[in-house]
Amino acid sequence: MIFVFDGIDGCGKSTHAKHAFDYVVSRGYDAVLLKEPTTESPAGIALKEALESGKRPSPEEELRLFIEDRKWDVENRIIPALQKGEIVVLDRYYYSTVAYQGARGMDAEKIMEMNSFAPKPDIGFILDIDPEIAMERIKRRKNADYFEELEYLKKVREIFLSMKGLPEVVIIDSSGDKRDVEVQIKGFIDRVL
Ligand code: TYD
Image 1: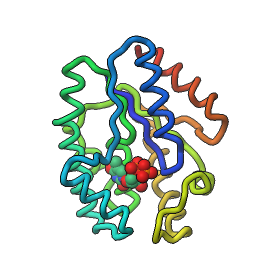
Image 2: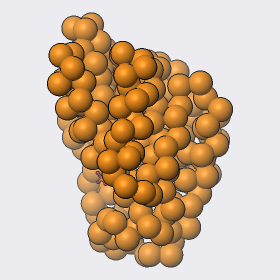
Image 3: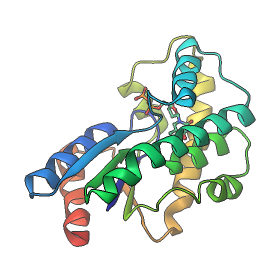
Image 4: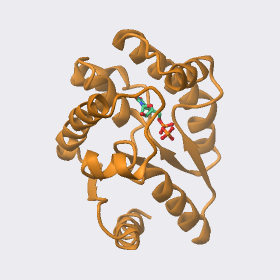
């Protein structure tokens, strides 16, 4: 089983991914908590370095790197965990590639198709929040222009919200109380388990 937590930076996905992981473990399941981009594959390392330096590759090159990193993750961590019968909880997955690289002008449908090698989640939680609130929550990235980043995140959010028609996707308002969000997430997880 795969549960994914995704959304714009500052939406709280990492917190809720960790809570969901702790919850399934507390219910007696074997589970693993994974994060993308990875810090292990050559592509993942290249991406982290690019993000930290503030020098982003071209949209095409960036898309290629995220897909290559995901192929590594699927082959080396996700499939082996599923084969061991573990529940995989993911902090970001291909919804991020569709939204973030889509917002850089790449075709969202094509990006989805390019990810068809990746096992489909049982639930893809997309935590939704106003980008201005999200940006207040997180420290601004070094070298980033506030308005440029805000405009970019608005586009990313729009693409995330356009995924509401996907059968496995659940969009959750993440602007309110953290515990309310957690209760909602547990409800969905309970139903699937
Ligand atoms: P992440 O490591 O989640 O950020 P943080 O440093 O806040 O923990 O992700 C790093 C950035 O990579 C984030 O801005 C989203 C972006 N990203 C993409 O553009 N495409 C993708 O496919 C993924 C997985 C992430």
